[in-house]
Structure formats: C-alpha cells, structure tokens
Length: 107
Image (cartoon, rainbow, N blue to C red; front, side):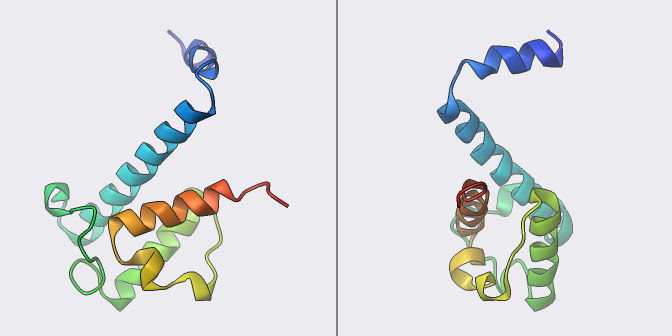
C-alpha cells in the first residue's frame, strides 16, 4: 500500500483516530528527544509522571527542550508558558503540546 492509499484508508477513520495517533506521536517524539539528549538513550527510565526539572533536565536543558518543541512542532512558546505546569513531567509536556496544536486555526 503506497502512502496515498494509506492516507485514504485512514481518512475514513475520523478525527478521533487522527488525534489518537497525534498524541502517541507527540509523546514518542518528546520521549525520544529527552532520552537521546539527557538520558543517554535510556527511554525505559523515563516515566510519564516523573519530575523532569532537576532530575532529567537542568535550567539550560529547559531552554533546549523549549527550542526542540518550537522547532519540531512548529509552534511558538511564550516566556510566560515556560512554567512547571507545562514542563514538569512528560505527561505535562505532552498535554501542553496537544493544547498548543489543538488551538491552531481557532479565532
């Protein structure tokens, strides 16, 4: 099945399918970035609810994470959004990116 057929096959699955796949990809991409850049590739040691700040990344790591998120997901992150509510755990980061991406096109 070529990529056009794959897209057409999935097109009928609806928005829920796309959002589920998107959330899974967001988590995998962020987990991979954190593991490769801060944990020597050990993704199994990164729990969804583990505090990242101070345990996995330091203050300069926060900057690296924010730059990655902005570039990888093509979003802007304002200074006031760089807070622990958005970045403290992997789960928080994923939820933050989902909100940012979900807000596109709404005005």
